[in-house]
Image 1 (cartoon, rainbow, N blue to C red):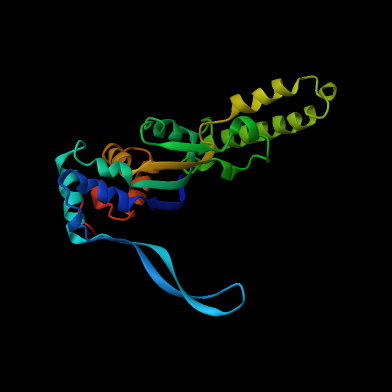
Image 2: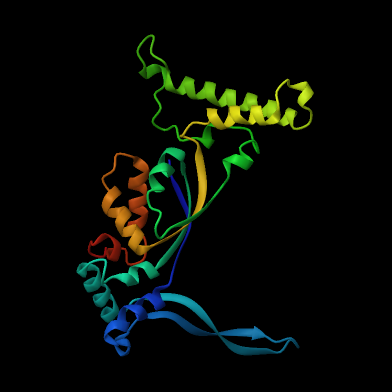
Length: 244
């Protein structure tokens, strides 16, 4: 399971201007990145008047798009503008996927929800985990361990130790174990299918590397991420494909 939310792409104007710096070709820029519009406002005295505000818009002109495509084909040394197009997104995904994502250290920043500090904040539920591929009883042979039952046992154990931990925070005498000892039971029982949310900052160059390396990966989560990449503005700069 993977969920991508609150996507925002910024930096187009600076990236295009930077791409034109080597040849001093700023006069050929034909993109409309921001626009001014006239709006009706009311001043402090309640008198209506006209005002202009700057809104974000994105309309890449053919000259600029052609230049960026040619720079992308020329290789990473020439397409430095790709590093200036920044993408923000909230990603919720299992820990086993995050372990692979952490390969991409350069050009990424992430703030994650903390299992160290907040693992006990709520009762554990099935939806806190990625379990869509776990086999049920009806699909197992007689005598085989059942993955969904194993997961249920783990969730019950986590909730048991969570309850003891909350009690131990009040009085250690009642539990016979210190709160820290009980906390370790949750931390070391927690499976890698546990879903964690991170707010991530990337750029188009990083996404190009991810797309090339992961589009045929065996994990479903990478396929969903690559489909999300294809949905970004002017994703053909990342994927090399023709614009849909």
